[in-house]
Amino acid sequence: MNSDNDLQIAGDILEVPHLLQAPREHPATVAEFVGLARSIAADRAQWEHLVQYDATTRWYHRLRTGPGYEVWLLSWVPGQGSGLHDHGRSSGVLTVLDGTLTERTERDTRALGTGAQRVFAPGYVHEVVNDALEPAVTLHVYFPGLTEMPMHSAPAAHCAGASHDAADAVSA
Image (cartoon, rainbow, N blue to C red; front, side, top):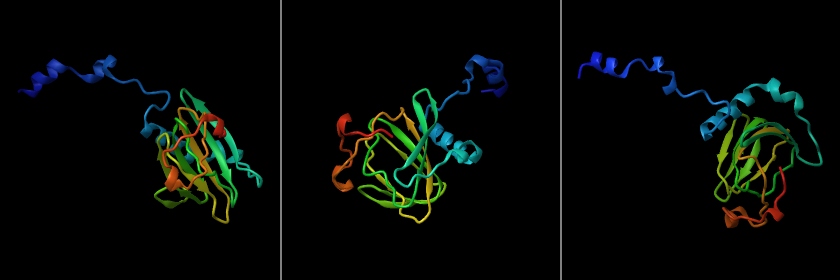
């Protein structure tokens, strides 16, 4: 085929605006939610002044909402943890903004340092703990927004993927 003829038939895509995808106002894919978390993490002025530390309980603040998602900022002083839980029907992106946390699952224990990200699907059972000597700050993006956080009492290896009723859930 002659490429000149192909160009004449197809035309210039920039001349056909109805074929171009409009930029999305809000994230819609996992990659876009990861990108949202990274962009918020990089803009310390947006969140750093909001962080508080509470020795009696984990501090949290809803930073942003959008259609079908929420962004939360959490602080963790040494010794604080989430308990073994999942996020109900929500998927999520956890990003460590400052400090180091330990994540425990049925298969693994890993240190999550500043800049680390974890992406998880509904039913992902884990526990996050600040085992370090310094406080930590994390950013959490949940899609859809977090409506339940079922707690698990069995060891992670025993209850991965298990589900509890909303009555057993605690809100984030």
